[in-house]
Image 1 (cartoon, helix red, strand yellow):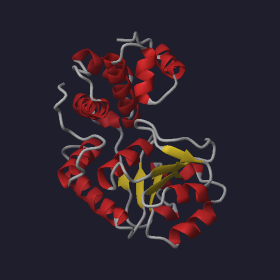
Image 2 (cartoon, helix red, strand yellow; image 1 turned 135 degrees about the vertical axis):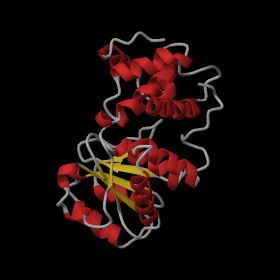
Image 3 (cartoon, helix red, strand yellow; image 1 turned 180 degrees about the vertical axis):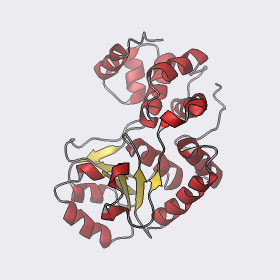
Length: 254
C-alpha cells in the first residue's frame, strides 16, 4: 500500500464519491439501495432537518465519527456524550467526550453531538430542549437493532449497519480501505501496511468496524515509528495503553 493511495480518510476533500465509497464499505458494495437510503438520511441530518440514527451491533460511534469527517469536515467539532466517561480531548480517530448533555451541546456548536441510546446523560431532557431550539448542531444517535420501537427511531428510518459476519469475502477489502485511511492520517515515509499486517488484522481484530479501524491505525503507527513511545505519540495515547493492547493480542511490535 503506497502513500499515494487516496481512498477515504480524514483531512481530504469530502465529496459525494468519497462519502458514497465509505458507505459502500460499511453497508456492502452490492447493496446500492442501502447506500442511497443512507445518503438521503445523511442529507437530512447535515441540513438539520432530522437527527441521524445509526443502528447495528457493537459500538457505532467510530462510524458516526467517520461520517462526520466526510460530511461536516474535520474542522467542525464532533462531541460524544457518554455520562460514565470524563472530559477528554479528541485524538487520532478518537472523538472528544463530555459526560453531561448541555456541556456536550455547547462544545458541539457548529458540528455534531453523538450519543449512545443506552447511555443517555442524566440531563437528557435539557439537552433535547437545547437541540429543539437550534439548527447549529447535528444530533447523532447510535442504537442497537433491538431498539426498533424506540421513539427516537420513527423518522427517518435509521441507517442499518449489517454485521461483518455475513461479509466474509469482503473482509480483506474492508481492512485494506481502513488501512488506507490510517496511512493517509499518519503519512508515513515508507510503506505503512503490509500483507502480513492485513493477515494479522483478519485473524485477530476483524469482528467489528471499530476493531478493524483501531487495529489498522495502530499497526501502521507501530510499523512507521522507531519505538513504542513514538507510536503512542502518533496515536495520541499513553505508551502503557498501547503496550497493554499489544500484550493482550500477543503482537510483537514491528
